[in-house]
Image (cartoon, rainbow, N blue to C red; front, top):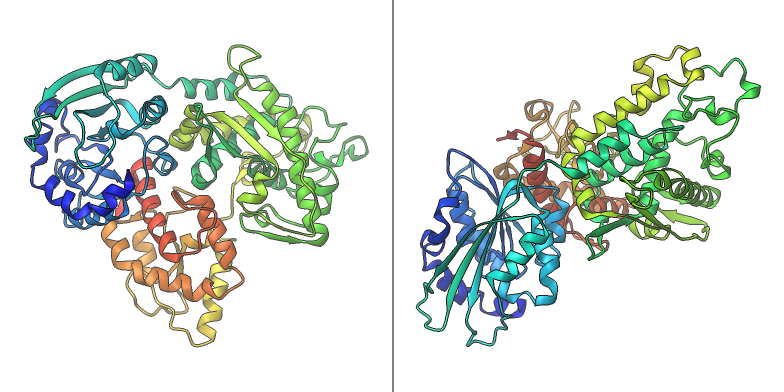
Length: 581
């Protein structure tokens, strides 16, 4: 079906845009957004942008989904001249999966699916409806227009009905608020339309209650449950490109990635520089750092040969895109295998909801052959197996992660304070929180700074990506997506700028106008810094793991830039971050 819209884009654009959006959507006028109550809206099957532009003019922050590249290109041009306070962000995505849209972690107040439903085969509609409802904010509205009548131009239509949507709504706990009937605005005698407005009730988040119960009420003989939940929150927030839709209301992420995040956390805790316990001979050496379990005579299940071989490495050395050779390569595979085994046999086994048979998570673990070289990329992480959870719980981690993580950290600190070895050594709150700090904000910017300094030494004119000005020795390395809101030192996120500009930007995200203006400078910096460097593979691996809509084989800086702009909009809207204009 996409081929038809690709080949007929210009003709269809003229046809669609000849009819005003308010006229087309008059039947649900009582539910239109208003200027005094700004919302976030999703237009699915946005075509050439007529409805997306209209929603933006009503004050909505709009995301427009369109799979046909030719239609999307016209739509981008049609919607680019809106005022500075409203935006349309275009996404290459489609029903029934809406994978890229889900990667943003947003919830929408309004989702419009206009003149699309009849193209979706009946066997895929249940999944499509579930995907749409999972994107709604509490009290959010889903508007679906149903086209009745055959096409005469070769397009395929599948029968539609209000009763089908009502059945889906009942199954998913949605309320049918309005059903309207319309004639065809293009005066096609055999065509007529129905519009259904559905609403998601605001009944609280059941998934949040599950998480809270696991954090506050579950018994814990070790910090394992907290480590797993924090790993998942972090992965949901920073690695949109790693999730796989299982098509049954569940999603999977690479087990090796979960194991890596698990190991990173314990690296800092178990290697934290404090005095050995007085009775060190009676305590397993893995508790010589900050105690993480009640039984100090036994070691931790994942602290084995692989862990000990990599004892000289710091937590930040275990990063996406990292390369390990020889004995270190074998050791990292052992460490992640041991961590995955512990995750499956300990916290996963003891995290359930209401009944012990109703596990929150499932692990399908595979054995990994040790190799002489290892790259920490998606393919490698997938080789360890799958970590599976409900799609609704995954979305909960994405949307509410900034609220969940502080609770995890507080519970972790309280649990560590209760352990006798830690109490005897009189560790302070500052000790615990320093050991739990996810990442050193300055440490990993050194790679980008080192590369910039190398280029300057070779005579390269290093310029600010935001203004194009030559920078001085006092230049800053800016996080495009602010570290304070989204801690990532990935190479794509580190951009040279002047000290004055970086201090002005502070913890704000760049506006869409800033991003458009800076595109050439950003891509130029990426190309000059990383294109002819052995680090390009790291750059692309980090981009594919973190940014929405990129494949694991991405090799284009332009594609990374487009994905970065979508990520910026998503962080802004999800976390309500101010803009730098």
